[in-house]
Picture 1 (cartoon, rainbow, N blue to C red):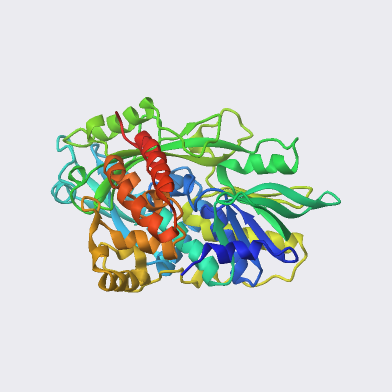
Picture 2 (cartoon, rainbow, N blue to C red):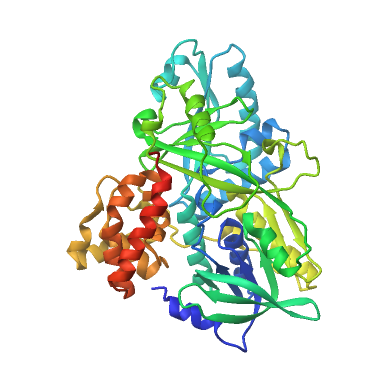
Amino acid sequence: MINRENLIDKISKQDKIWDVVVIGGGASGLGIAIESVTRGYETLLLEQYDFTKGTSSRSTKLVHGGVRYLAQGNISLVLESLKERGLLQKNAPHLVSNLAFLIPSYTWWGIPFYTIGLILYDLLAGKLTFGKSKPQSKSKTLAKIPTLIKKNLRGSVLYHDGQFDDSRLGLNMAQTIIQKGGTAINYVKVCNFLKEKSIINGVIAQDFETKIEYKIKAKTVINATGIFVDEILQKDNPEAKDIVKPSQGVHLILDKKFLPHNYGLMIPKTKDGRVLFAVPWHNKVILGTTDVLKEVSVIEPKATDEEIDFILETAGRYLIKKPTRKDIKSVFAGLRPLAIPKNKGKKTKEISRGHKIYKSKSGLITIIGGKWTTYRQMGQDVINKMELIKKLPKKESITSSLHLYGYKEEVDFKDLLYFYGSDIIYIKELILSVPKLDEWVSEILQIKKAQVVWACKNEMARTVEDFLARRTRALFLDAKESIRTAPIVAEIMADELGYNKEWKKSQIDKYTMLANNYFLK
């Protein structure tokens, strides 16, 4: 059991000096904290919202080498990504699965062109390959994706990539930090820095729940706040220039009937020169994504009508049944923290997805860019840099072979609870001991009451949103259905966390207001 009071108690000790404090509980922050704690550093991670609340729960759910980076000639990023894709499947097999994709071709040159590129993709993966790319005839293509438009279809190219559940992986990473002796706490906001002679030696943080402020001393502070890195940099130095430009990616969720078999679809060129994916996920289909620069970083970005229509129109050029706004079960948007390009005219799709590490005069270390697939490498690079800056003896990284919390070698992906990995047995024991926990929260989304209890006891869920958006993916899979379940979830959580009727009502209201932005009126 993970007890929040025990975690808070650790940051309340005035005399404690942490080796590393990481600000931000998304992919990069969690990866850095795992790297730090497994090298033996006293590590604390603080997240002002819930783990992966921002960009890190809003991905296309792919652990991939980046076929389009290959087309751009960014071989080093493809190599790094393919290596990390393979390691992640070895270290979290309960969350990362091998998915076959088809690139359909309606021209004579498409099949040989994509086959050559994807054979190179396979070769770059080396021993960590997910499978061979192969050309497919028209009949084989339609047997795998029968919903494709048949007219002028010449066939396709099949290739393999990884699929995962982003916020479940983020949660398992937070649990790994704690399991290895570190501390990771959600709903604690870093408000300011402690300094001595202009050098940062800690942070001032506030617990969102109790509003109590803590002065936390640290030898190193790392800013891994994604789209909010500029905000943190400017707390340190009000004159610091912005280094991040947010770019919005939108995804739509449709019924499985649009992609009835377990194959992904990759549309190789959209009108704006990107790729578009249709991916089977949790018995639904994800369509995405877009790449539109935004002026302001916000925690709950909203999809525009133009972005939604662009995705529907692009998919409709390939699918027999053209998806419409009425088919959308949920729509979600995320903001990528892209490095501000020196060349102002650069398109977003051309800005590197590689990561960059900065050191401020105050000693603050900041990371920007990167992608989910390479989170482990990012963590390794940041801690290597910290050891260099602090003139510490270089400690060996062990994360390339570190099994993450929940690791389970044999995974039955047909099991409703497969994504709990090694925790499945405990949830099933909970159901046996309290049979009413076998009742549905949502039969449509296949969520049991036992999962709510488990999320409160062992997964640091503090709000109805935590459970419906990230411990399960209800909000992202079917926003209307998730609203219907909110009172059931609030009732169970109030019992588990010791809250009253007012809390329940407030939680239901807050969640309903949030979820109303995830479906089209």
